[in-house]
Image 1: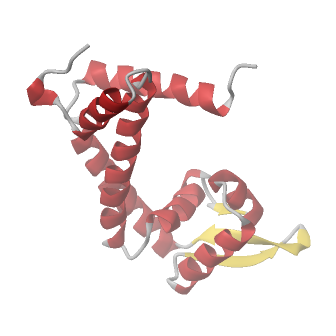
Image 2 (image 1 turned 30 degrees about the horizontal axis):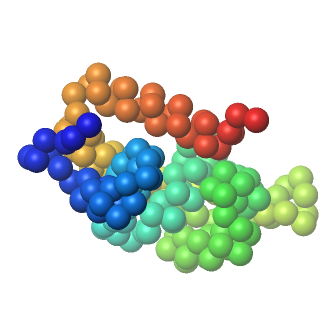
Length: 171
């Protein structure tokens, strides 16, 4: 199926090039994942800029947002944070160090296990994450305005289904 000239994008050009040199390939998956990758990259860059206004990176936002979503008292262990964010403990330590220096969280001994630590969002961290999540959602909402509400819902459903099949592929 050919795409109208006005709505063609760089992925269409890549698919056309592959069709010219390898007409035997089925590039349907490339059409989907090429766009998913480009969208993720574009939005990731925009989110990084939005969070930079609050003195944090996307990765640091993820840490304080995870603490915020955990509910009061906004405390988790470094291990829980690492598991939720799919980070190594070394990667988590670097983020925690920077966020603690910025006064956005504090680490303290776990009252139930002397060998463990707890990470808690500070009042300043709570204020920063609440502002940053609003700024990020505004950017995401603006990007979704290219779709109507029904289309956005369909896209969310399709991506959920695709992600579930990729993370937990059928045996």
